[in-house]
Image 1: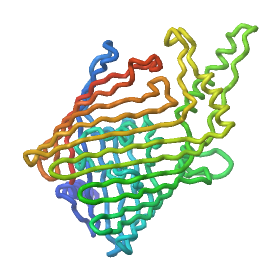
Image 2 (image 1 turned 45 degrees about the vertical axis):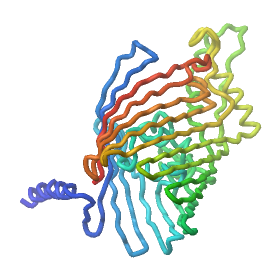
Image 3 (image 1 turned 180 degrees about the horizontal axis):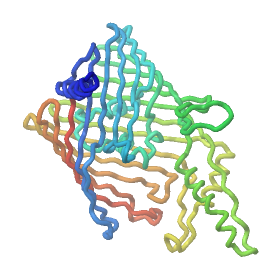
Image 4 (image 1 turned 135 degrees about the vertical axis):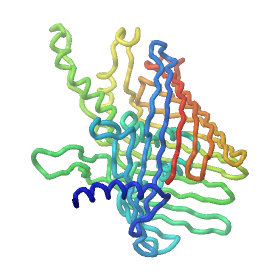
Length: 422
């Protein structure tokens, strides 16, 4: 009988838990953000590809926050992506944030734990869907594309400590943040022998450091951000691993007078710096925002020599993809991203926005060294303070007039979404 009661109480408790907004259980505030989408995709570059449509729970973030004292707060965020299901291996789930904040003064706050670092303006609010007009976030912040774009190459995803604050200066406010955390070199599997290293542990002595300084006044906000760490170059190293796996078979069929192909080296850990700029204006129903990110790696002479070998070894011979040889990896490891978005509120509950972005990776010559551009138009209706209905039309394409772009991109994407805050 007790077991039956427990089985009844748990669903009932869950129903009560989520039936109100920003509820509190034993002093713990529980709230969240979610976005559900319907997406249609048409490939204009390849007419043989049929259009597709799909429904998706794009992202769901569930927050638990507790005020431990007037100056100490703790927060945890459990994040679900892409129709998450363990039984079907869909999407992903992660503890995206878990930190404790000490706030002795307005000018001084300290966060310790897994946190979203202050880098440019968007990084800290990327999970709060109702706060921005578009459905797909600026692409380097879009967690739906984590597997295909390796977002941590562009902006720091997490830090483990941050000191930040705000200092009033006349009618303006000076914001600052300094953060540090693990490098990209986190262990992903259990080692069979040697030093005990658990999955998620940093296997290096070098760490991520960074920060932002900015000003706010009269609806204008701007800032400069930067980080320094080491890059893993997983995308290039995967190309190397794929090619190395084919080399024994290729060598086996080469005539005796043809030199055998050699196994290519991987790129080592290379020092990397990110530089970011953000600027926004809000006033009179108009919001204009933009960001720029530059990612620069500083390889040593040995790493440059290895990169030259990789470039040669990963070049696709003439006749396989194009009539000429196609170089897939470039020697320039610079990456950049920028976006601009303009939104106007009208008739109290309606808004319209338009945006343009460019993402360029000089080392990825298969797509285009000049980058991939995105043009979007979005319309929204705020049904309530907690629910926003959005529609979006996006065109994503690369420089299709360039012979260097071996893969042509030209897609039209239409989306409808519901963003909810509870």
